[in-house]
Length: 428
Image 1 (tube, rainbow, N blue to C red):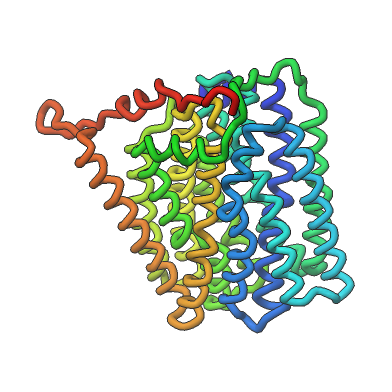
Image 2 (cartoon, rainbow, N blue to C red):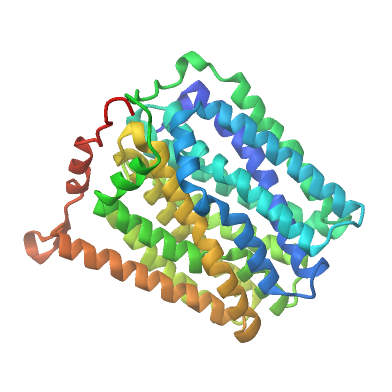
């Protein structure tokens, strides 16, 4: 099997990948339908309401980061995922039924968004860390990148299909279809060979919620990665707001909105597959991705036609996945195994938790100043993130002058920090 797809040679990872691909297609169908319901059925084109919905849905991972990270390291991740995936199924089926019955209201949608966020708070870190249970440490970065490829491959299919079927049969059916797709992930979890899962690191004594935060505080490289992810995630990745409002500005309907999401995914899938080819995640690749995102975002904000705007989204998607795949792979590969769940919970909380901060602001800017200015706000955030990362590289001494006046980045120094794990006090 080629280097790019080497993790698929592992049985447990292979069936997880297939199940996740099916489920992700349904998730993107639901995400597209949810934004369109709020924007066109429950409000009269209120981007602020879309932003508030996103804030409620992505807020719990930030607020519950200590508990969810502890749970990911303390309990069987496979069991956690069986519970969360079943809860997602029930919520999706209920939302779809209420929409089809004509009973959905904006306050109810807000409540369901919060419910989805509460489940996601436990699901996301467990799902991220579970990848490390399926493959060896050497293949972790590859498995993370292939997960991203699955996610973005589904993004090519789900929104486009949702856009067409919203026009044909309405939004409610998208939630019901998504409910059925969770059966694929649940089936994959049940079919796994438990004896082939990578043994979990043994923690002596009782694990503590604060250990993850203490560990990150000792890792300035992780702090920089988290700052970059927060700024880009909070202000640059509000695509439901950007794509829906730009679609309306260009006079496109639900099918046009769905197509924009699928076009974005073309670049995202390409970025994920290229990330899978790399032997390990590197900070310099993440910084290059942030700078590329700033350029792509700035260009997209001035495109005069729907077709040209859609074209720029290919490059936007490519850079976003380059950033996130690299950041995720770096965090997983350089974090001590017994703390990986808690550190990943912090990572997920920062990535998703930035949305409650940024989405309402971006939605307000889109309403008051137009979607193009909102996109430019994301460009500014990316430039600030890149500036912080580059400043840290220079300040930390990791950027050196190489031969022939070329700069060389020392990628090994951050890794040396992890050789001293945080100790657990006896009896705790």
